[in-house]
Image (cartoon, rainbow, N blue to C red; front, side, top):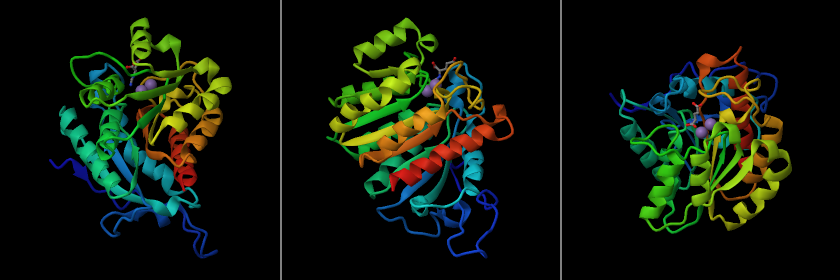
Length: 312
Ligand SMILES: N=CN[C@@H](CCC(=O)O)C(=O)O
Ligand SMILES: [Mn+2]
Ligand SMILES: [Mn+2]
C-alpha cells in the first residue's frame, strides 16, 4: 500500500455563488491541487495525516485517522478570503496497519521537502503522534536555527514509553534535539494540572518547558508569548483540539472537562500567525466519530481558516 493518498474529487465541494460576482468564492474554488499546480514560495502546503495508531498505542479512543477529509469538507464551503488562495492541497499520508514510525518518517520527509522549497506546512489530522513527524520535519529543514514549539493542549505529551504514541511526541523531539546538541524550546499553553501526573510536571520542569495552565490562560497566555516569539527564529504551532472544552469540542480522543474556549485561544493564535515566524501549524486529535452534528468539525475548520488568513 502506498502511504500517500490523493484527495478524492468529491471532497472539495460546496455551494457555487460565482455567478453573483467574480470574488464570491469559497475555499473549494480556490484551493489548488498539487498535481495541477506548481507550488511557489508563498504557498501553504495542506497535508493530511490519516493516522490514529499513536492514540491506539496510548490507550485512547481511535478515530483520528478519519480527520483529514472531514476537515477538508468542513473547510470547503467556507468563504475564501485573503491568504486562502495560498493553500495547495498536497494529499494525505496514511499509516499501513500498525507501522506508525514508517508513516511518521514519510510525513517528516514531506514536511522537510515542502519547507526547503519555501512553503509553509499546515497539517490536518492524526493523533498527537503527528507532532513528532511534523516537528522533526521542521527541525531538519532548519538546522542551526532556533525552532520554538508552541503546543496548545490540555496534555504535556512528554510521556516516557517503550514506543512512540500520541502521548510521547515532545519527549521524542526533546531527545532528538539533545542528540543533535540543539536547544529544545517547548511551550505548552492551556495545560490542565488535573490531566497530567506529577511525573509529567517534573519532566516539564526538567526540560524547562514554558507552561500556562488552562485556569490562567486568559490572564497569562498572551504575555507568555512575547519572549517565546522574540527568541524564535521559526515557530511550529501545534493545536491539540482537546485544549478546548468538551462542550465546544466533543470530537476528540480525550475530551477536556474544563478547557480553554476558542474565543480565548484565537488572540493567541493570531499573535503567533502574525509574528512572521510561523513556519508550520497543525490541528490534531480530531476524531469525527465523536462529533455532534458536525459542530466540532466546523470549529476545527474555522481555526484552520483563521490560521491561513492570518498567516498571509
Ligand atoms: N495525546 C495525548 N493524550 C493524552 C491522553 C490522556 C487520556 O487518554 O486521558 C495523554 O497521553 O496524556
Ligand atoms: Mn496532545
Ligand atoms: Mn491533549
